[in-house]
Image (cartoon, rainbow, N blue to C red; front, side):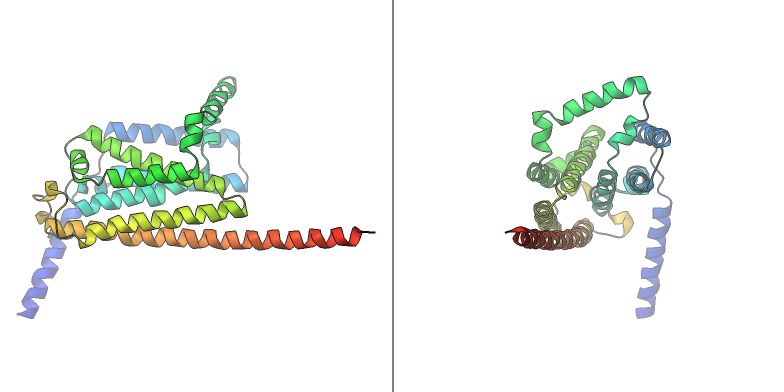
Length: 297
């Protein structure tokens, strides 16, 4: 009897695996064309700008971020997100935890600017600088406000009626993905901006810990809930060997565990940099005081 159950389970797993392999890639022009244009502009800018070790690392980071973004939006993960909540959560985690920080750390703006002809470069650069220095952009790009916007986007889009609307409208679905990616890039860019001093590292550590807490809280709510939040998946999960509630719990675990591990690892790294920077400042302060004392008559 047990052997029969094991055979049945392995057969069902094989069928699900085969079904996943048969899910097609998505080649929607509204997704593929902007990604292709972004990649071509960046490659042209990188070629014109030349390279050094620092720039090569940035180029590698951007290409890795672009590659994971392409994977999240065009691979079978995208199509599966229409049928499985857990697959949709995996897609969101790739956007927020992998693509956004890799693109942010690359600081791609300057390289993209080099893609334009020299006669246009200064004008575009001046306009971009003007926008970046405007009050609204300065306001939303401060670390605290960027953190609030990223958290708000995550929680608001998981309100059941808003989330289910993304499954029935391509425009709303696109708005969800754009807001997730944009606020995540804003958040990570703000952290990279403040992490330049002992106070900056300390603030960045707190923001990352705070993000780990609220992401894990939402994931835990989904994982342990006995109420189906998104009935729209009620008729699609059975084909993949899951009940709708099991799919929801799996999606909550995908949000809870990987994001918590990544955010806590980053926070610990920032804390290490904060302590090292504080120690360095303390040593320089002590040395300066000693030299000042020696110079006294």
